[in-house]
Length: 315
Figure 1 (spheres, one colour):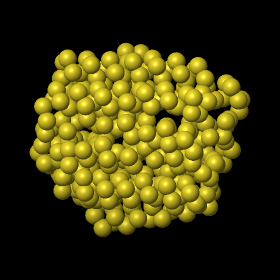
Figure 2 (tube, helix red, strand yellow):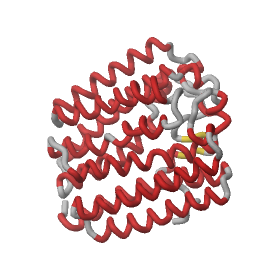
Figure 3 (tube, helix red, strand yellow):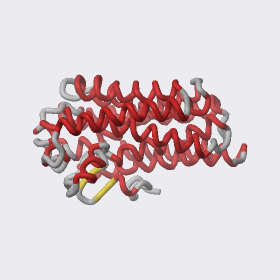
Figure 4 (cartoon, helix red, strand yellow):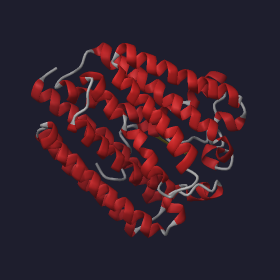
């Protein structure tokens, strides 16, 4: 698959908007509450959770545990995203990409959105604790708290490294998935966490290249808006190199086989090649091709990990 191909999670990219914000405003109250949770971001988080559970189980986990973990993860991420929209409603009104969000259009009062977000977090903790274990519940709540407290309230508006540090929250679902199965952590989920942590900057910065004017209008210092584009893409390249190395480290650490290993090498080479292409021609169109491929990369890589485990150990 070429770097410019359509992402394998098509709902992540739409003709007029992106997974991390949409120009189309919800027209119903129910749709607005759903939009508060940023379901397209949740979709990608869950794509990493189930394969990690398969790896932890060395086979397919009980369907009931998968369902509970996905439900709890969805509620936790949705609650964190809703708080993010509550806090960012002022800058969302300044950015063309986010002007259709529910708190900007006024279809939901801010207080109601905050109550909704808190309720989701409480429910998420209860679901994971009762249906999986306390460790998975604590990890999910910790990720939400980190996303809101460190990224949304602190770094997003103050630091060019906002998404680097704050993006760690998006890597926690692999820890939650592993903990739900094993009720403990080990080196394999930690390596997966590092990989997702390293994936986040090139993924988000590719988007920021396209929407640099939006971020400048809202005074949000995403890296491509505050340094020369060449410098930003150079950092994207090195993060991608580190990402690929971490995915290969997982082979001996988790005892994975050739299906995952070959896939990681091929996809890694394509991802690195995409950053090189963007460095040579730093256009919004090329940045969006790389952004789209970054989603395909995660989807196929974790799919290959699942297949590798199931082929070797069975269902």
